[in-house]
Length: 298
Ligand SMILES: Cc1cc2nc3c(=O)[nH]c(=O)nc-3n(C[C@H](O)[C@H](O)[C@H](O)COP(=O)(O)OP(=O)(O)OC[C@H]3O[C@@H](n4cnc5c(N)ncnc54)[C@H](O)[C@@H]3O)c2cc1C
Image (cartoon, rainbow, N blue to C red):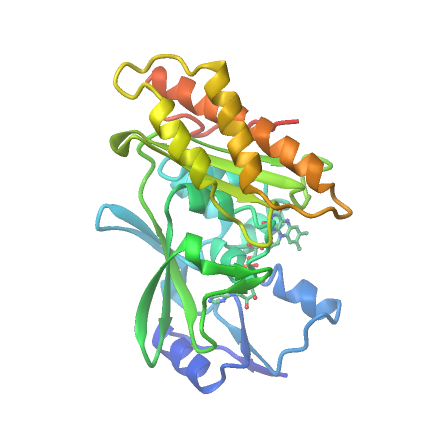
C-alpha cells in the first residue's frame, strides 16, 4: 500500500488526479477501523493531515468556511456559538479521543446514514466545497451530496476542501437516540434550525433512510404555522403534526439497533421536542442550544 503525504492543497489535488484510487485520510477514525478490520484494502492512502489549509476555518461572504480537517473538538470550542446545532451534534460523537481526531470532512466523506454531523448540516443549508485539479471548485448543497448508503456526489478525482454554513440566525437543536449516552452509533437522530429572517425551519434526519435527508413537507407545514411576527406560542397540535410529517419523511430499516417502526416513532418525538425547545428559545429571545450539553429525547 502506497502512503502519499502531500504538504499543500494543490499537491493533494494533483495526487488525487494522478491516483484516483488513493483513499483520503483525515482523522482516520473511520478509515483506520476499516483497514484494521480488513473491510478495505486501498492501493494507496492519501494522508491529508499535512495540508495546513484544511485545518482552518474563516468567515467568508457572511458565512463560515470550515476546512475539512477541523476536528470536532475545535468545532465545539471555536464555533459553538456560530453553529450551535452542529456543535451539539459534535459533542455526541464518540469519545474525547475521537472528537480530537475526527472531522466533519471525514464524516461527509464516510457518508454513513448515521453520521451525526449530517442532520445539522442539512437543517442549516450547508454546502460542500469540493475541488479537483482538472475542473476546479464545485459547490454541492449538502442535501445533494449523499447519493446512497456510504456514497457521495464526489468524483474519483475530487476532494472535500471545506463546508460552508451561515452562522445561526435562530435557535438550533440536535437530538440523538442511542443505546447509551456516549460512544454510540445513532439509532436515529434529528436536527432542527430556525431561520427567523426567512421565516423558515430547516430539518435533518439521521439513521432514518439510506441517506441523511430533510423533511420538506414538515418544513413547509411549520413555516406557515409559526407566529413569526407575534412570537406567539407553538400549539401542541402543530408540534405534533410537525413530528408526524418528519416521521413520514423517513424510510428506516429494521436492524440490530432498532426497528423501522421504533425509529419513526422516535423521530416524531424528537422533532416535536426539539421544535418546541427551539421555538421557546426564539420567543424568549435566546439563540438556543449555544453552550448547552444538549438534551436527548428518549
Ligand atoms: C470509537 C468510534 C466512535 C465513533 N462515534 C461516532 C459517532 O458517535 N458519530 C459519528 O457520526 N461518527 C462516529 N464515528 C465515526 C467517525 O469518527 C466519524 O465519521 C468522523 O467524522 C470521521 O472523521 P475522520 O476525519 O476521522 O475521517 P477519516 O476516517 O479520515 O475519513 C472518513 C472518510 O472520509 C473520506 N475523507 C476524509 N477526508 C476527505 C476529504 N478531504 N475529501 C474527500 N474524502 C475524504 C475518507 O477517504 C473516508 O472515506 C466513530 C468512530 C469510532 C472509531
